[in-house]
Image (cartoon, rainbow, N blue to C red; front, side, top):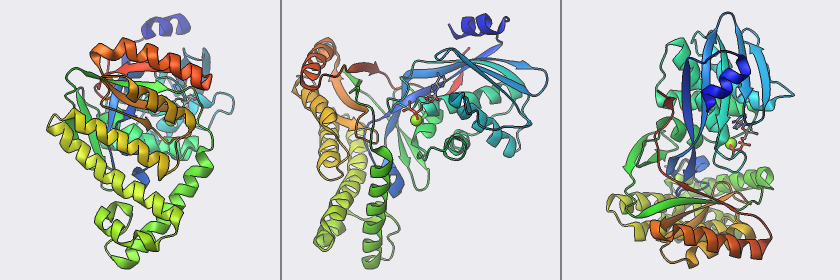
Length: 381
Ligand code: ADP
Ligand code: MG
């Protein structure tokens, strides 16, 4: 499909195609900027790019989703005020050049089925697809972690969006049938076999657009820093909340102001939940895994206070369906998506029941995406 879109737009055939997936985080929310752990999977919703090298220094981009075009010269890369979507690719090109890779001109058609702006990271998928396209056409290969960092820099410094490393990391390094445990301090990672047996990962988009994110996000970060500083005064080895055990937290929590106490309680317990969730997966105990997802949601709702009525309603309805070991909000919060484990036999029932009840309770139209854990970015043969 993307090859046809390329040909239709440019008038000649592409000679290669690449893909990069979106992602969903199974557990480990608001732990990344506390140097903690996350456990995302790459999903079978992706951004694909059909490409062809072109003589000279021009890069011409066509987004089949937006039916828009944007072109730039590799010798003078600046943001495009009118075609903001192209900045994700421009930023990647700029930092590849800065890192010393030599790039030639390119024509590229882009199409993604990662829902845009729902929190499944179509932006990281676009950046990683672009980096993979430049690799493919210019004959170099980056290590996955290096590629992820470069793409994150494009989003942070060029697009101006202050995101963590998780999205680019999993889009580069995902493996089919695996979740990826990432240590956000060391950037060490581990592939964790995701043997879901008769269960599926179901993402539920609440249809509620994420509001409040920036101001609330900054407030949470400050509260976490305050908590970390408090514990550093007691335990000199503490550099971030990641270093505080639940035992230490429980012993001293009473001395913290109540809001900071709640925030720290979430982060400290969430980090431990991620590690317990990994053990549960290794033991094939999806019941335990699901309970940890549930606890994560409660903690995000009551302690971190980043949920919203729509997320809570969808999670509550999901859990009421038989054959659902766990359900939680995923992403930064205040809207966006939930993630649930759902038994294969219940899938139809789940989507119908939850959708109808959710619509009735909120007046919003939900969307469901049943997904598999798939491989990270690469060429499409
Ligand atoms: P999310 O990453 O949660 O989907 P963001 O707001 O971070 O949401 O990123 C969405 C932006 O990424 C879009 O507004 C657009 O600029 C860009 N983008 C994603 N997919 C495509 C695509 N297929 N074509 C063009 N731009 C895209
Ligand atoms: Mg994004």
